[in-house]
Length: 292
View 1: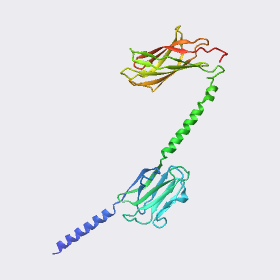
View 2: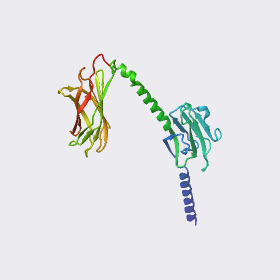
View 3: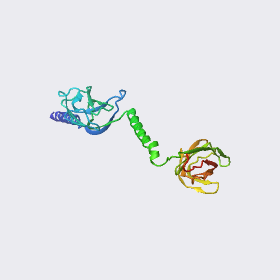
View 4: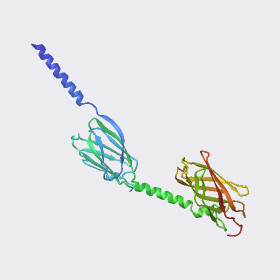
């Protein structure tokens, strides 16, 4: 008679022990990174917290530590704010439906002005470290880029152009040369321009690729009618590769021809694939010393 009772008690004790073990299963602690944008359409990030577990926030920007706001501060949760960090710990266990708002303002006056989070009770995971990334709005990024471009343009303006010796009392001699078409090679040049200054010559011409293959210009040579070669300093194609049926701008910088010489030159452009295009009548005005 006693044996069934003993087995029953053993089963009850075993089930009770298993239930207590399941209820005391430790929560997984984790760290993660979140991004705040300041966009009101973006929902606030949920931060999982648990009683007796410390959660640390790390910020890239300085905080207005005196203005941090959190629901239930001092009664349900403790908060310790630093210059770029925030430490909080729940004093009580949060109900399953409880949500506490956390608002952290930044101190530098930039957008977004603050970060907003929602503190929720942890289930299987609890957040112990949060790295907060503050994303600047596109307008701020564009403004920074614009200021950088303005500074760059100012550094390369006419003042620096003259200071570098690219201008003198004779000014810049500019003339144009007519379009040319190479039906066999599949290229055509639009009307081009030559600019002659003290010690330099710049050719500016637009090339149309009429062939069925892309063309990647890589090298240029310039030769006078008398067969005298002009030293080419650099060549740039915009874009770098000219697609079939498309056009591109070619800029060629050379040394200036000797003073008093001018006339016509042959400009040859060679591509990566070996194909070349020659423009036979590039005009350059002679630069006479001492006369504008």
